[in-house]
View (spheres, rainbow, N blue to C red):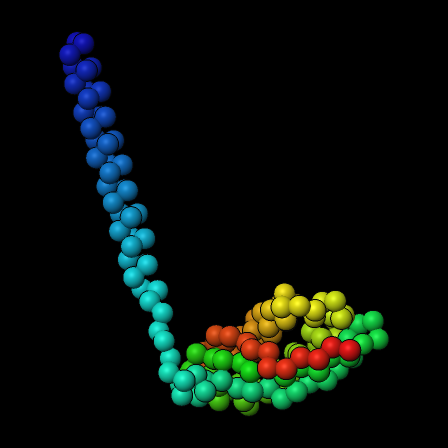
Length: 145
């Protein structure tokens, strides 16, 4: 009877080991496959220009009796998205004004403040777009007084 139990335990250990090895192989191969799909596509300068929209300068009051003057360029993932964004320029300017009204001078100081504003604008503009998405927002001019 003892030899049957030993044989059963050995078979179970081997079966569990094979199952674990199989699961590990599946997980690793899945991770490698995902890594290969995320290959970055480099755009030419002309393609970047086609997919970028310049937002005219916006001047508005900000908190603490100051004002901000900001202009931006928004890079999208396609020419079609840029064309749609050009048509929605008034909404982008409204987003910029809304966000600036909620900020004060200290919120816009330094690169961290500029980066935060760019991220907020990118997220809100992405919500507007039906064609494509925002790749990057560039602040081309900013004055805070």
